[in-house]
Length: 282
Image (cartoon, rainbow, N blue to C red):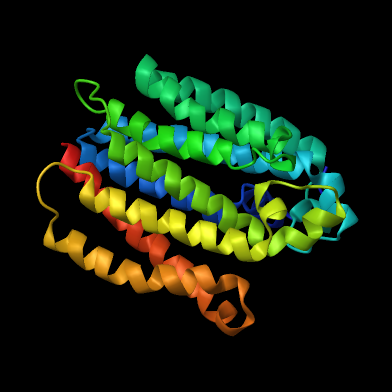
């Protein structure tokens, strides 16, 4: 149970933070908006939102449950389980319950979209369960985030097939997210024996790889759809080019302070292009 004296609101806050709240909200919001753009009606949009939210919550809770001993070993101050606000046992129960709920809600959208959406959930659990410690650590991000837009599009009327460029861009964004997400924890991970692909490549190469992946996503989203690029697409590429250069310089002391804002700009830009790409599918 949570530590004694913790009120209900404090416990709820701890549980929300343990979902990895920022990424969970961001992924759920993007998937929901993409669903709206792809033509889902109101009830199916709500169902999609709930399915993705449950899946993301299960991934976050399972991460903090499985990594509890590691996080305690390096005294991670941002982890509710380290603070004693919630126990690994509670997180395990919530993670398994949320995963089951994600399965049910996803399959209610239909077998094809449901299974595609569950690829993201399975990928997240596989990463948490051990792939994060291997050179294949990027694979769950590529498969999971490549399958997400395909699942959202397949949930639309007629079960359409997502175009290759939308799936490719999703995978590239996922891989870039992996490099960006791991970067702040490289030292803590090394102290507890985690050596995923970014750890093996090192901070400088990882920064370049993440920036290039975001740049690739931009190119694919603008040049992939049939017909000439739109004005918004050209504007996006114009903004992306110098931002990729700055983001790639994250491994050097001179540009380190500018690297994070650059990555955020690129990420937001690519998400906007992704949503515009969803509109091009319909």
